[in-house]
Image (cartoon, rainbow, N blue to C red; front, side):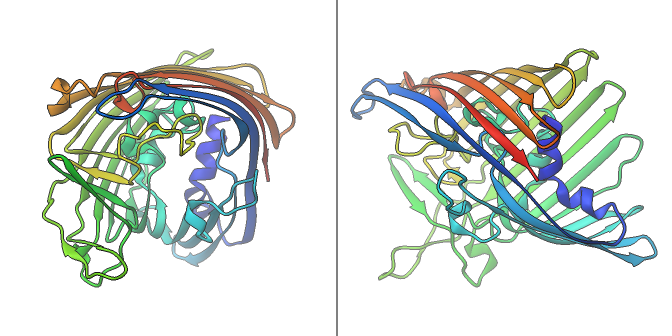
Length: 400
């Protein structure tokens, strides 16, 4: 099932590899029920937290979505391709990604077998796409997935993103991308103060948040290796409210993250591991359970897409495995991950090393339908001392 998730996420690549084809309608409906408990001691002047939720979930194994994709053979080895993909909450019928019509992907591009592929628009970063194959959970199953400790691959999507990916050369492939305006919010912290800036769309490019993403992967036999590098550039202007003019942003910190990861197949089981570091901020924090908000537990990025904070450093690691059980995508996925405060956080008692263990099992009912069961426990969740998040759930997924 993990490979199915990666295929759906990379449908642009898959579709563009074929000849001229009609427009294809595809999608995923994923709905389940989960029980989540969160808690935290009274720290840093904040009241203690203890809350429980039993409720319906959408998009635990795969984000519920629908989309259109198509390709056109231009001749001489060139192909044009597009993907329009919108997220939705299958429990409520509401659109995802803030109500965008095609908030998951909105891509147009060109592919040439010997040259590679270049694609434009709103899309996941190349780092996110490559690390989906390293994470035993395929960057799914909420707080259990690799994005809980490695924020730069936490299914990061940017607007206005231009990405290029090389062809595969004897198992080696690489890609690089640049967003002229990420379309995400930023939390800019200076000393004890913090200012949340919503997404912006100013005329001057440097007035908006921009980002660089790059990754490479190598596969030979049973071994696969991936490395990524991501960097965000602060917006030069911060919206100051509907009745005020924008103000200059003095925070020029550039959050940076690098990760290396690998998988190795022993035939009956696939092992996975990753290690990385983030400096001067954080990328998109994970909420408890399947990303529930309003729990009282803060995320490492303060609820913003990117945190800009000099000296806010961390170091992360993950080990796990995938164990298949026959056909129809029956799999057991398990991982343990940690995120350790570094830099100035190492001496701040508010922060402590996060540790998360997670497990999931998928059981195929047909080629298109499967059940799943999952559970995860996080201690010092999002590196906040004493914060805990536990979840157990089950659900049904339909691919069309």
